[in-house]
Every structure is written in structure tokens, then in C-alpha cells.
Image (cartoon, rainbow, N blue to C red; front, side, top):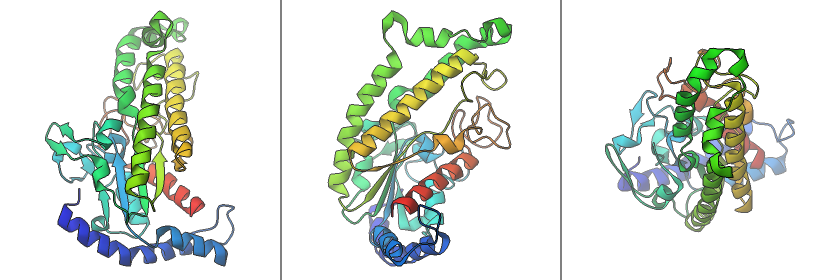
Length: 321
């Protein structure tokens, strides 16, 4: 996290640096149709990033817990210098000091608007980092409002026995039955609540950073495509893999809907991450399993996943600038 005095200096530095990064985008880029950028397109791209700074808001999928090197204040937010905001800032030609990352492990949507206590320090309300000078804001939030990591952990606990019994139990859905007992889907209800809260938060983002292009970043694929079990990595039946995929897609759909309703840009990280889920090979996956093989928190992106998310955001910036 950049402190107040450093933030003022970084704003001034960004005013100088961002025209250069606009040029870097043009030199590296094509227009959204894949052809060379025209003079008009160049003017549009330059205008989108030539003024102000970049602020990253979000939860642990943004922060990058356990990915080296951990940095920032408070320590309990577990931000990595290799998370997607840092990767994106580097791709845009910015130094670490020229952008502000206030993402925090464990953050919910309400923590955008109020202080968050962590296991080691208090993170100020994330929206407090915004200003009228900002040009780019990324927001990756919502998973903790649904407790998706907790849901996955419970599904592992409930599915491990039937997933190991044999093929006749592969389509069983003990986890789905747990979360849909009584005729209601508990996860769907939480997603609906999160939608209303996110709508409020995005309005406040617009008020605080009226000139910024805002990118709402979706969640990458945690599990393989439906019909496939995840026994070796998580012990989840194919039936519950399909259920959890459905719920993650619904969460991402909510993020997309709210982003568009606010006039913001939704960044799809699910599509490019398919085949790189927690059940894929260790040398290709973006998400680590319960026993990580790469430095990262369990059920969270590793450095490869964070880079993949940064690539998706960069592509969105190029296509909307």
C-alpha cells in the first residue's frame, strides 16, 4: 500500500509516466479487430491513460497471498509484488510507486467502503484510495461474500468418500444437496445479496473517481469443465464439479451484469483460464489445490494465474481505450 505522502508523489510521477505508457500500448498493440491502430484509435488510447493513476481494489484473488514477494501495509492483507495489479502496472510501464494497490485478503464488498481488520493490521476502506485524478481502477471482489473458498472446502469434506468409492458414485452431489436443502439455493441467495451491495459500491467508485475507466475483474476457473471429477486434487465428484462450476459462472455473470449497469468494463478471466484450473497439471494450472505445489495460498491463483489475469485486464484496456 502506498502511504499518503508517497501517494502524492506517485500521482505526480504518474502524470509524467502515463503518457509514456500510452505510447507503449500503441507500440505493442493492435486495435480490437487485430489490425494496426489508426490515428483515431491512437488518439483514443492515449486519452484513456494519459492522465492520472492506477488503483487496484479487491480481495485475495487480487492480492496474491503466499506468492513471493509479499509486500505492503498492513501485512495481514498478504499482497504480492507478483499479483495481477503489479503485473499490469509493469505491462503498462509503471513502477510500483506509480500505482496504488489496496487489495486485501479476506475482503468483502463492504470492505471497499469500511475498514477491514486482518490477522495482522487494519486495512483502511479501499475506496479511500480513489481520487478524481485516477485513470484506471480495477476491482476484483465478491467471492468472499459468497464464501466460495469455504464452500469448496466443505465440498471436499463431503465428497471425498463418494469420489473415491468408484464410478457409480461419481455423479452424486452431496455438496449440492447440502447447499440447496429446503428448496432454496443458499449460494444463489448470497450472490443476489452481493449484487445489490456491488451496485452501491460501483456508484461510490464513480463518485470518487469520475474520470477513471473502471474494470470489474471476474474470477478464473477453479474447477475443470462439467462432467469431469477432481479426485486427485480435491476429491470432488463430477456431479458437484458441475454444481460448483454453475455457481462460479453465476457469480461471474452477476459481476458482469453489475459492471455493465454501472457503465464499467467486465474482464472475463474465466474463459482464458479454462484448462488451467486447480485440477490441471502443476506446470500449467493457474489455481493451486489444497496442497499447493507452487508458492500460493490453497485454492488461490499462483504467479502464473496472476499473470494470466493481468493479461486479460490488459487486453480489456486495449480493446476499450
